[in-house]
Image 1 (cartoon, rainbow, N blue to C red):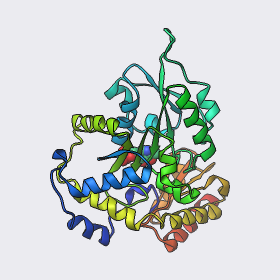
Image 2 (image 1 turned 30 degrees about the horizontal axis):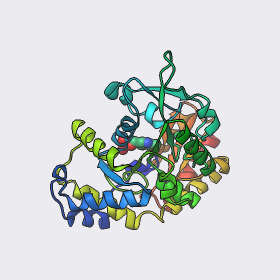
Image 3 (image 1 turned 45 degrees about the vertical axis):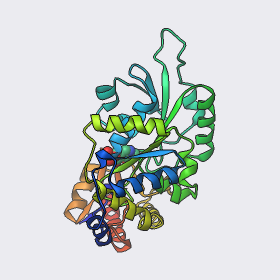
Image 4 (image 1 turned 30 degrees about the vertical axis):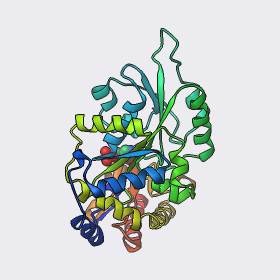
Length: 332
Ligand SMILES: Cc1ncc(COP(=O)(O)O)c(C=O)c1O
């Protein structure tokens, strides 16, 4: 099977598995796991923040991150297609009493459009907007990279208006490799940011949340409260460390493969900036089903849209084979 449903389907490589097996570990709830500490220190540094917290998933990283910048009864403002409101099971409301409000952006950040919707804290009638959540790259937007000037404008505005910024950077490393913008540049334009190890980076589990030392200390309590305090988690952190050393530059290959798919499937190349390709105006259920019968797995965004995601478990030959199969089915 050539599995292009998501970059979360990757399996740890032999080298990564060796690194996991050889990890020096301790009890991380006691703060004694050397591999977890190393991963957290490296991420804090890479992202230009004081501290970092290893969490089991991107969802936990996002939800704790938002809780650290938004009190119950306040709201987080974000794009209508953002992962934090689409795929996280209403956690902000269900777990933290956080309200969310959405703006239709199409996935590309427009700072002015969001800022216009912010509601201040001094009005007795309105729910106050405590934070804005930004997604980079944007998953449902087809892996779009957020423009640096818009991120800068948003952050500069937020400093003057007492509004925080949370960054869902599940695929921030893809954004950085595609744009050439250092991770720390993106990181410094957010108060809290979550980055996934288990997507394009190829680790089996884990995300890292960064922020100020005080916020991350509070985040550590929230992680424990939510059951995310892991013990000898160094076996997982070791996979993340290995990914940082071996799987970053190679993301450019995934992006190249995505462009190749776009070309073959008639997708506007301007919409393919990283490793996600969304094919529009197709009979998605039929194509997905028939492709599966030919050994190619793709996902359906909805009845008319398919999504293909490139990653380290599918090489160029696999991508070409998938393009042949899917292009053939679309042309039917
Ligand atoms: C943009 C984005 N944010 C967050 C997540 C959540 O990650 P996890 O599945 O580890 O909870 C994902 C997962 O696909 C994602 O695409």
